Amino acid sequence: MPLYLVSTPVGNLEDITHRALNVLREVALIAAEDTRLTGRMLKHFGISKPLMSFYEHNEKGRIAQIIERLHSGDSVAVVSNAGTPGISDPGYPLVRACIDEEIEIVPVPGATAFVPAVVASGLPVNEFWYRGFPPRRPGRRDRFLEESMGAKATLIFYESPYRIKKLVEACLKVYGDRQCALCRELTKKFEEIVRGSLSKVLERMNENEPRGEYVLVVAGNEEET
Image 1 (cartoon, rainbow, N blue to C red):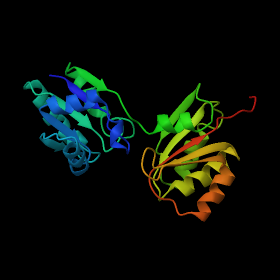
Image 2: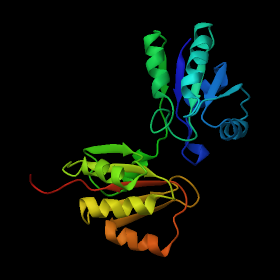
Image 3: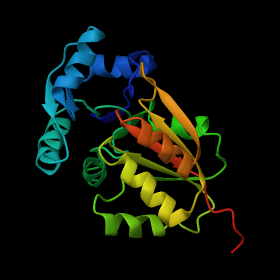
């Protein structure tokens, strides 16, 4: 039986697809990054299915169990807390293991946070570079940012409310005062998109304490090299 990679809403539950709901109703097992969050989502849609925890710290140990279920004839769906499994969330090692075992993999597309962020940013979308979560340590973060200094593509980062200000400061130091869009709580009640230069966005952050999950979109390098 196949492994389904099911995208779930990043905030607004109305963003889930009919296909995703049908798959979640039909599979034998759902492997979830947080079984409590997924359980609440399933209850909202009237779905009752066995859940298995599948997150960063137990991912490798769960792979053998999931593959055993798949070989036994059970279909399994993988979901993250929000968005698409494998995009800064668990999933990649399982996908590789299933490929090695010649197990069919079925992606069920849907929401992911960086797509609405980049299309609403007002920055070029013909080419963009999704970079995910930067390293936490300042030195490693700076080196991580320096890797994309010369890129003309629009740059996309994820960050938590606890480190987003440090990330904006680091981008200002490494890239200079480029244009950006700071996107908070996308699709949720308190959704907010702040556009402008990195320095102006940083000023705004100094006036308001960061809250919620963030996507930072930064303009690429427009200088001739």
